[in-house]
Image (tube, rainbow, N blue to C red; front, top):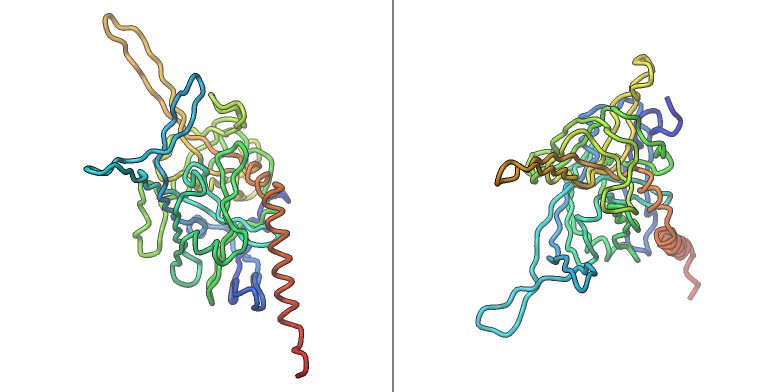
Length: 333
């Protein structure tokens, strides 16, 4: 087993009995940390994802003198000389990753789109009841919290509070993520919420699908700054932002090498191949589609970015200052 994989082939489970409290409080991170010794199972893997909903400002790409510009869309109010913003609802999937300071929600950037989006999340812990909340509320509780976006890749992260007594969540530790791309034809598993299916399951259970790695990291056609990994299947709408796990050793390894699970990427989108062939007076158009993922290396790049590191540095300083203030005995009257 490779040392870069998850700790002993599984994830670290954080049991948060305190969670973030007011900055004048005591502990702000995990009150207890333990390592699960049981083999990683698909049923457990399904507990690693979040269902996400976003209310976005609608926009459209317009060509202005040869330059493509994204413009916000507004609707005219009948009978009045005024307009209201056009909003669209987007749903998708997220997962959790742990930095040295706190956990983050990880998802696709196009779901969030921009900081104007109004987002909500639902998460089902291993132990405890389903929890939900808004990212706006998280930003009120965590100073400086916001959506952080990769410069080029379709990936975004937002700090989260996994508070609540007796709730256990599975979080991927950042320092265990392997930067090596998966081999071709590696079997992968994608748990997610296509078309919002699974959200209303009594246990918030995602739909889990499998496919295989179809390419090495490659430039996304039409976007020279973005590298992606293609899958040999088309994933439904709603899997965007979902974690993609390998389910077995690479094809080049012996089947006796042992079962290994690791995060290899984040589901991003679908690429459409069109082919037009003349057929008399009409043309025959054939179309194929395959999904692609953002390599996990882009997630590590984002968490290591100057913007995220500066946010964590300031946050950690506030946590320490609050802790010292709590420990300082009051001056005698």
